[in-house]
Image (cartoon, rainbow, N blue to C red; front, side):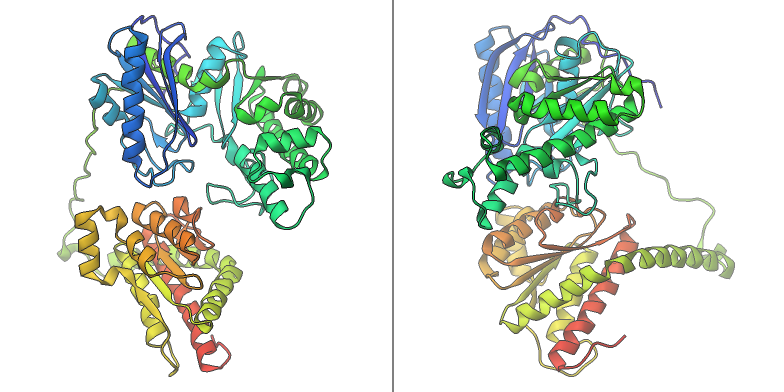
Length: 552
């Protein structure tokens, strides 16, 4: 691992076009090497289901900003966006705040549109660079930056060097667990600080409480925001006060954990939620002072960001200048081109003649060992599996239909499930209503040809699924666009969604009412557990339909 380079924008004086992609807004500006912005423009982020619409708007804003600034063509393009992302390749992998933006090659697209090299960086890391050089972190040796906005993210400058992590996605401070087994986060996990202290979560908690009948001054608002909750808490409203108090307390827990790990000179808090000022800052400061492990950690200065709404744009611009100046604060210099994927040559020395019984025994022992380990861990999902089986039984009993789909081997798993339902598992009982969407070649090829493959399941779900149905998706990664969009469509249709997935469920997990997530990374082990779980559910459904008790 190479040592991180110093946070230095270089000495380039050419204009850099800075693009910031947020969940609610797109912001662009031309940034000079001193961090000054020119020709700034902002527009709401369109959420149409097609990321190309937003990218077209972003690039149009960029062209207009260049024209307004009057400083000439862009010498580089600095791009800021929430992760996860592949900074070197310039690809947005699956940012939770941008549903449907999966494997989007934003860097190469920008390089082609503006004829300049690109630098892609996580938005919170971009903000950290800006605050460290020009804002509240100026003059510090080690600084942590947290943005508390739609989501929560961050960046760390340690010893004057920006730390991005091994793959460039370090700084996901919003996913520090502060309440194990707590609220579902946008990442698919539970109990993250983002699920309690982000603007989105604060507003959601207020709406949930009002919908449950809680009395509050917020009740006169159609859709209260985090700012509304803060204002009501300042006025002494009991509901708002309780929501706000828990949010800032758990934010303080996360900040204290970070202070204990990094022992920084300063922690800088930015983002829309921090506009509440002392209502947020004072409790966090108090918690850090009281619970830090060492005097040095407890002495860390906790301050609000100084650069305002343009902090990510300024940071993206500075990182673009660093690229031009040959001093890239995020690692080795990057250039705007696609990178060929190296291929691994086939193993030498192994032929059918050399695969004897001993070799096969070793292979089998390895595979069985992995299988047993994952199967044992999957046993912890017993309650989730029972709930999934109960869901299917109750919806079928009420006249609902089970719709299933998946890609590749997961498509076969989807067919396997519906086969057990329409046919039978082990008992002679009545057939049950279940259909696999990946088995209609006319619909699949028509939709893929006339639209995109991303639409092949979504359009079928929108045509067929009804309230009371169960829509079941199988995905080992949780990242396939056609899976994610179809589950989202099912929820909009009022159907209940069930995901057979793995890990944290990925973007698909965000649209799953219930999820059976195998604790494994190996595709083959995940699929083996999917088969095991669908067999257990089939036994449960079989027994229910036959009026018997399930058997082992």
